[in-house]
Length: 165
Ligand SMILES: Cc1cc2nc3c(=O)[nH]c(=O)nc-3n(C[C@H](O)[C@H](O)[C@H](O)COP(=O)(O)O)c2cc1C
Image (cartoon, rainbow, N blue to C red; front, side, top):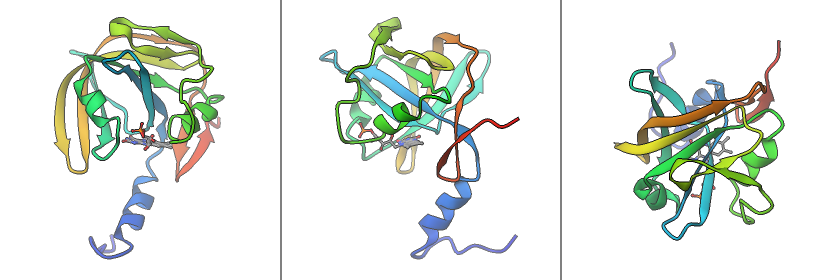
């Protein structure tokens, strides 16, 4: 392995490029504000942690406006996007426009918004949070979930992909 310089101008770009070699699915994490407004953002840092108890993990950038709202919520949902939901991924990662406009949502435990047409949905109780550098790491208990026979939307090398046989 060639020794990498862990600082300098292009460190961040090289580090991101290397991390981008890890292919992931894409989720939209949703909850409600104390005033009842639905909020959500696109997240690919989601992963499984434990089967018993059922725990999942994801991380949220500290400087995002939604951070205090997710930190303080009791429940949130992880919506795993299907291959035909790229528009939702873009919409929930963009600052322009009302993210839930025109979206029909279902309601899960604790009032969390559940997106339709997803591969899987997990309702989580917001229990444990850790400092993760410039992110906050959520490790949460899954209290409800469902799954549909759909192919997932993938993210690899900074681009959207589809499952290939
Ligand atoms: C494919 C993809 C994956 C993302 N994953 C994450 C993530 O895991 N954590 C995070 O904090 N932001 C992630 N983002 C960025 C947020 O979706 C984006 O900054 C969003 O605008 C934040 O919402 P907010 O402005 O309401 O706080 C991702 C964006 C994309 C396109």
